[in-house]
Length: 127
Image (tube, rainbow, N blue to C red; front, side):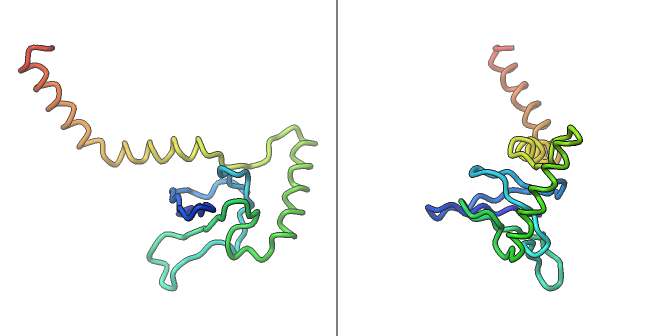
C-alpha cells in the first residue's frame, strides 16, 4: 500500500506500507486506518492508496471517522487495562523497513559498486 501524506503547503510525501496496525503515525500524530479510506483502481493492478491530509484526523474518504475514533479510544482503554500498547505503525519503523527493502532489491548493484570502489582505491595506492 502507498501512503500519500498531503501537507498544507502543497507537498506530497509518498511511502510504502504493509498494513500491520490500526493506526498510522504521521508527522502530525496518529491517524486511524479505515476500510473506506483505502483507494484501489477498478482492475486492482496497482497498489492500494491511502491519502492522509495534514491536521485532518481521518484519511481522505473516511466517512466513519466519528465512529472509528470512538472505537479506537475504546481499544486504547482496553489495551491499557491489559498492560499492552495499542497497535500503531510508527514512522521510524516504516522508514527502516523501506530502507531494508531498497537495500535488498539493489544488493547486486551495491556489491558491484563496492568492488569497483575497492579496486579504484587499490589502484591509487590508498588501500
